[in-house]
Length: 94
Image (cartoon, rainbow, N blue to C red):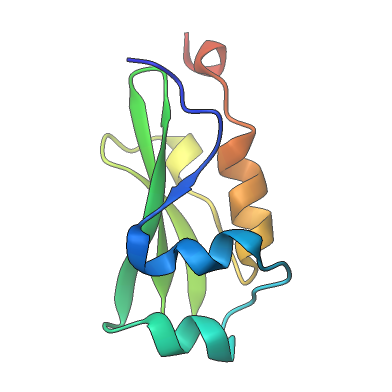
């Protein structure tokens, strides 16, 4: 599988791609959220697909379905979590 250059937001959340300093409880973000847990999008890194979830008014968290320490990352800041996901490289997992 090809590595995506950067995280890709789901269509509903595309507007977040150009907004900085989004933190838990952000009014713009919360207006887009329909459920208490929402997948904001994903990034393919080699054979691994990472997703960022927003747990409404709690945290942003990275999810990788096979688990591992690389999938145990969360923050109150979307910028921090995006930075983490966008800096993952396939060679990190060889």
